[in-house]
Length: 96
Image 1 (cartoon, rainbow, N blue to C red):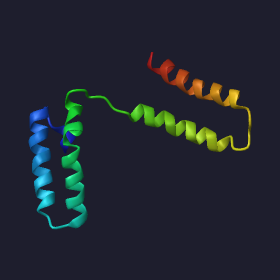
Image 2: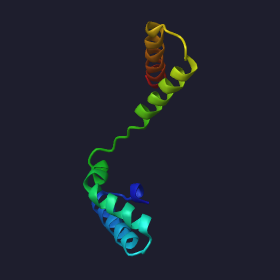
Image 3: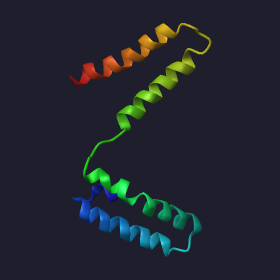
Image 4: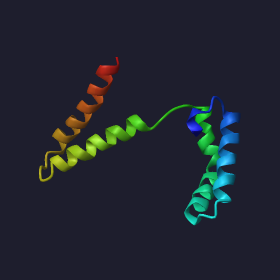
């Protein structure tokens, strides 16, 4: 798997090999995906320079969307903002 490679050079070789095999597969959708990966190869491999993830941000956004659905019909935006802030506070209270 790409993210399991020990360093950027090894990951680059792994990704290039995967793209080559997918391109030679003859499967249209796989070839299209390989082309997309090749276009974004530099950004994908940047993970090895800056190993960060947007996972926590995506999780917070999902919680906000869920709260928004649950509060459908309520008009108190100030309370909604406070609830969003509470998600943020609770998350960092557990970490700190």
